[in-house]
Image (cartoon, rainbow, N blue to C red; front, side, top):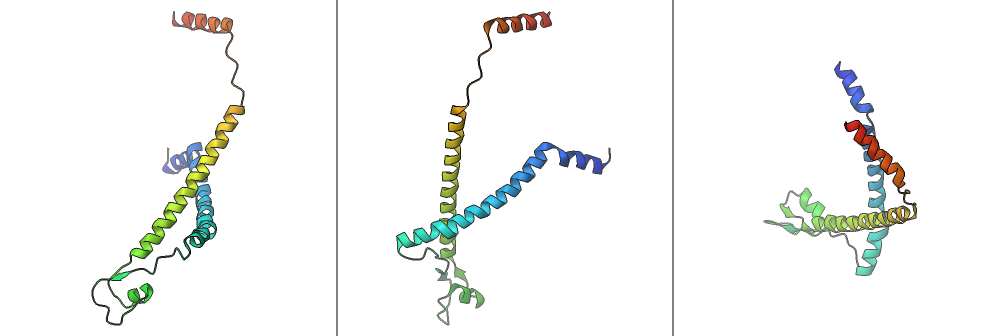
Length: 143
């Protein structure tokens, strides 16, 4: 079997295709969640806190700051050694909010799934006579 045939067999298998679809849907879903956090939740959090939640301009210059630069972009452009802890705080807050939104979405999906499973009727148990006949069949097969 040639390598091309092996690859074709591998790529056409259901698991690989399911994974590919999952990755594509996951990427699109990630953009939706990112937009939800950035465009809907962060403005509400900023409004509640009473200020902007963007701390990316918080930094500390390690060493000399001869021109007293107080803007992170300007400090980095000037080649100063900066400890940019504010950017980390902003990314951390965004991550925590994103994780919270995903948790809530998964919680809602699990609740809907449980509700749907509860509504589905349980399969009827096998009648006793059929179960007995199956046992006899299995016993005869073993002998």
